[in-house]
Structures are given as C-alpha cells and as structure tokens.
Image: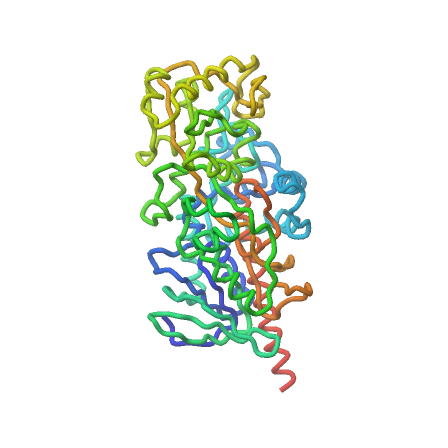
Length: 504
C-alpha cells in the first residue's frame, strides 16, 4: 500500500470494467488508485469467473483477425463465420430486453465494441476464437453461430491477469482489502473517498471517482428485497464482495437508481456448485449450457420452458430464474447417447454432477423425483417430436406438437441409451439494476444532471439489460463503459486542475 492519500482518479472495484477504467484514465495522464475490497488472492471480481466470451460487432472475418492475429490463413480458410454488424448486435439487445434497453446506452455499447476490443488488445489482452462453445464441425469446417466468436485467452483468469499486468506496468496503485465506504462531497463536487483497511478508516482525496464494484447479488438482504424471497436460495456464481456498496454510496449523495432492480442475470448451474464463487476453481466451470439440446424436467416430472426457443446465448440469462421457481429450486437436464457427444466441455469435467442409466427406468430410479410422471413426460415428448433435419448450428425448426410448452427447435427423441440426467439449480451473476449514467459513464442525479466527479462502469450501469441479455454482452459493456468512464473522469479532473491553475 502506498502512503499517498491524494489521487486524480480513484476506481472502486478491480474487475474488467474497473481496470479498463483505470488504464483509460492513466492514458489520459491521471494518477490512479484502484480499491479492491477483497484480498489479493481473490481479486478480479466477477470477471475472474467468466468463460471470457465477449460479444462484439464486426463486419467480416478480416475484422476478427485484427484482434486474433494468431489466426493463420489456413485456419481462416477452415472457418465459416457469419457477419455480425452493429445493427445485428443492437437488434439482439432490443429483442431480448423486450425493447426496454435505453437506446443511447445500448448504441454506445454496440458502436464502441470493436474499437474497445482493439484497444484492449493494444494493452496486452489476448483474444482467440471461441471454438469450444460457439462452433460445430460441418462439412470439414468450423461453423460459428450466435454472434459470439471471440473470447479472451484462458477465460476470465487470463483476462484479469493481463489487465493487472498492464495496470502494474502503467504504475497504477492497487490497494487490497480496502473497502470504499463513503463518498465525500464539497458543495456539489466529489472531493474524496472514505476507505476502511486493517480496521482503520482514512480519507483518500480525489475529485474523480469511478464506481465499478459490481451490483448487489452477493448481499442476501438486498437480493431478497429487490428480487424476491426465493432468491435467498440462489447460488452466487462470482465474487462474494459484490454486495451493493457502490449503489449505496452513490445514492447516499444524490445519485439516481436506474434499471430493472427486479431482474438479474441468472443461469442453470450445477446443483452442487459452491454457494459463492470458488477462486481456486474459476473459469465458469459449473454452468450447464447445452440445455437447448435437452429436455428439462422439475422434480414433479414436468417440463417448464421451451428449451429450444433460441440459441442458448439468448435464453440462458433468463432460464436460471425459471429453474429457481421449480420445487426445491432444482431441474434435471436429460440427454441420450445421440446428443451426449455434442455437449459443451463443462459436462466432461470432474466437477459435473450427473446420473447415468442404460435405460430410462434405470436412470429415473436414481433421481429423487416423481418417477411415474418423469417417465410419462419423456414418453409424451418422444411421441410429439416431428420430422425434419436436426442441426445444432442453426435454429432448425425441428419441433414438437401438442405439448405445453412446445420445444420449437432441436427436438430429437430421447431413445438411445445410455441416458444422462444433470441436476441444475439457479446461479445469480448480477442484478440488472444499477445507477443512472449517460453515454460517457457520468452518474446522473434525479434531475438528469451529472453528479460532478462521479462515474460508473460495468454492472453499476443500469438501463442496458432488462429481462435477459445476449451472451457476452456483460464483459463487453464493462470494457466499453470502463474505457469511456476512465477517459471522461481523467479529462474532468485534469481539466479542472488546469482551470484552477489558470485562475490562480
């Protein structure tokens, strides 16, 4: 810890958004401090736990090669990658948020996405093609789908290692086990941050603060108040330190809450996953995202969602909530041996909980479920499956008829043993509610005017995601708004310093 107690810009948090903000502010010439509430071995926020997939608008494979330079001509020739333009990205956001995403914020995220990826690469972040989770082999080529072809090398672990390395190279100070507890104002301007470390409280003088310390998902009380009592049972997929501190500090000095506080990003995760993110087992290893190829049944033996409504990129962030609503907050993803080889890598990990039976009866007899109804539901599903070509690389229209709910794509009979059941529960990632900010990351008051000197990025930005979100948009939003907030905060602080010198 440095003895310095005065900085141009203080960043609260140390995940992807926070470090992008710190690096961006440093680029502008600001002296920057990063405050990490957790210890050094638990740094990196939720970003540390992601699989690194990052959604970006691009015009062709040539664009992608600008951020994945290791891709050889031979590799490129073996790839089929549909274009994913800014309009496609924006339409995906609007479609899954039911048109509620704030257009100004969504367009900023989309339009700045590619340039931000190029900027991150320039600061040492390494990207690679997302072969594992977003492509299938067909006709001797890797066919990409779903608008998510790029990920960070070595998942979120690699992303955060590279960002911390760059922050250190730039001389950015980072204090660990240093919790920001209060924002100080002089007249109407930010003038400092109260920090608790080692049981002591001190004030760091600054006129620019960037809040990038996540949402409220790890705070059981806040979670239940905002989302509902049942959310006490949800597993916290990421860091235990995202407890709503930034929201509380900002609203205490007049910032406006904004966005869907009753909504969150939640997924189907392994029923036996840790109750909070385990920093010794990072990399999003507990998720179970091949469910569009499954049927999911609750313990009463009933299906409850259309598993094949869309690619998992556009349904996974809302289906966790649906699992939470089921008896005992559990569901079972059912696969047969036709589909089992197509499942994502997380299904092969030793951490994956599953049951296996040579027959459906043998499988179901191992499960704590209504066995008769379970078997009846599978039989009814098999009878309802229609003909057509099964193709996991596209929405194939291979569906059921006569069921509630129907399965509208990838409906294949469950008939070839051995059979598998993967128990899943709900894991919460972050709340969609945050602070009201403008497209530069300035935090706004209720009168829509900036709260001078206060900025926000990452999960702190309310108003982009409602109901659901397109996979990979969270990391991209964190990077885009981190970069914007860092730059805006530094210009604000340094501009004021210059004006003060001129006045003096």
